[in-house]
Image 1 (tube, one colour):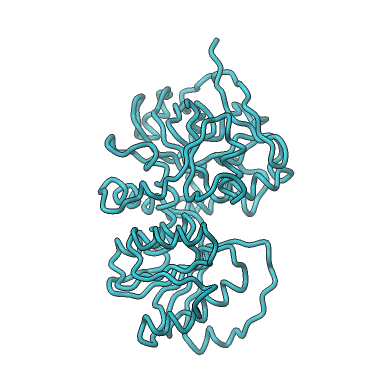
Image 2 (tube, rainbow, N blue to C red; image 1 turned 45 degrees about the vertical axis):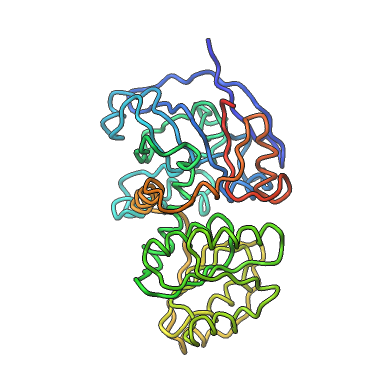
Length: 370
C-alpha cells in the first residue's frame, strides 16, 4: 500500500523525511492533498524549542491543497467536496464555546497552544496523536472534524495561496483590530512577512500614510524596498535616521493614528510604538520576544488617551478578505514569495526562515511533491 511522505521534526533543529500509512477516513473527517505549505515565522521558534512540542511532529500550518477524500458528514460540515481547492487554517476549535460562537475561535481553549499544552492544532500536534498527519510539511494532511476552510480561486497559484494566513493576520491587525480608517497615518515596525502584510492591508484600507521601519541589515534593506513596492509611502532605517523625528516630520508633527509592532524587538519596540502614537491613537502589539523586561512611564497612556491591544492570529473574515486581495492581483505579492523547498530540504527551509540559511528570504514554502 502506498505511503505518505512527511518531514518530521524530532529534536531541536533536526528534521527527517518519514513515511506514514494513509489514514482511514471516517465519515466526519477527510484528507487533503497538499499543493504547497508556507512556513510561518512561528515555526522557527518552535523548531528551536522542541521539548515543548511533546514529541516528534510535522510542522506547517499555511497549507493550500485539494480535498482528496471526504467523509459523508464532513462534506456537509465543511461545505466542501472532493476535488475542491482550499486554504486550511491552523485552528481546530470546538465550535460551541463563547469564543467560537462569537467568531473568536482562535482563542478557543481546544486550539489555544499558547495557554494550554494539551490542545491539538495543525502544525503543532505530535505524530503520536493518531493519525499523525497534522502538519502541512507532508504530501497529505488529515482533516479533523473541526477544520476551518477557505475556498481558493482556481487562478491563484499555490505559491500566492500560502499567503492567505499571513496576509489574513495583516488584515486582522490593521483593519479588524486596529480600526484603520481612510486617510489615516500608520506606522508599521518590522518589515518581515507580517509587517509587509500589514502594509498591504493598510493601503487596501485607504491609509494615506504608510510608514514601515527596519534596520540597516541587508535583509531589512531589501524588505524596506519591497515595502514601497507593496504600497508603503515611506520607509525608515532606524539605524540611520531618528525614528521619532522622522515620523513627526512625515506626519506634520501629529504622529500616527495607528502603530503596529510586527517586530521581535520586545519591550523596547513596544515602548517605541506607544511613543509614536498621537493623542487618541491606537497601538497594536503583534511581535513576540524572549526579552520580558519592560520599564516605561504608564502615564503616557493616560496623557495621550491611547488604546493598546495585543493581537494574535486571524479571524475567518480576515482570511476571506486576504484571499480577495490576493485574487485581485492589485499588489505584486509574488515578490514576497522568495523560496520554495522540497520536502527533503525542510531543515534548510526552516533555517532560512530563521535567518541562518539562504539569503534574502521573506516568505518560504515547502513543496512536498518536488
